Length: 354
Ligand SMILES: [Mn+2]
Image (cartoon, rainbow, N blue to C red; front, side):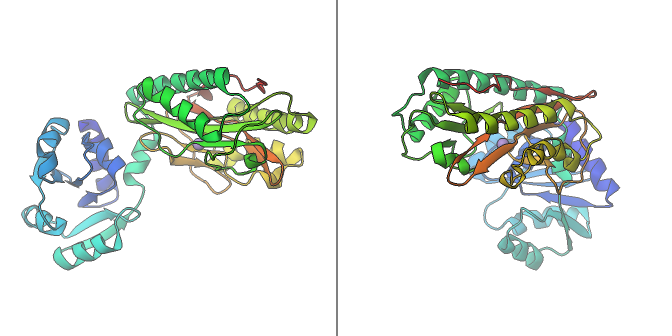
């Protein structure tokens, strides 16, 4: 990861920062390759240090050849102090959204320098994927498509939502997924109105719509996909709502492109859903970045001013949720390209009735 480290060091220079403490595990992994459960990076214009405890010293040496591995026994501040004194820094940046109050207090009491809160430094670098990262996301997306096909072959009335979730997870794990990043959403019938309706003991019934939203990790990269399908003919209202979501999803996938802000991308789908009269039932943003974390930069929402750049991978996931009735969501993983976008997940977006 020397080029990522270099990019961060350039960012430090741009922001006139002497050094930064990286405590967020995904940022640490991105910069160093070290994926143990305990570790902190200390990075200056010349320095790249990785602090971890006895359990991980050997692993860190192997995974992070570009970092000096420093043992950390009790307090982090005590481990950092000698290196900070040698470097002669007057200030140290830290990740304001990641440091707990107790760690902040420890650092403030023990370190003889100014602490400078920062946010988004590494996250901004992570938002634009390298071709290797895109390959991992593409491979994962293809397996997500297969998982959904697999599910369509076995879902039937009488199965519980939890069984559906388990089948999906089992399939993905067998294909090499490192595990789910959130508890799977399986929301059938009226429960479909819960955008985050975690799989329950409820059993699927004939005529219901079923929304499944599931994840995996391949080469440490998150996958995320949603489909709504029907168990037998769901009726005219369900078909009309499904079609509204499908057209909004298609509009966003076809028109999203670099240079657009998250607000503009979100509006592509939102305008269609509002025109169809369902605006109040689409209460979340259009999508989110996907990478080492299942929700990362950039965000596509009515509040997101950041512009899209080729190489970003985002979800496009419009939905309509009507309390007491149910809901529909269609979510794909999409790569922003120089000319527009390419969907990485590709299984059908037509309403599947089984
Ligand atoms: Mn998602």
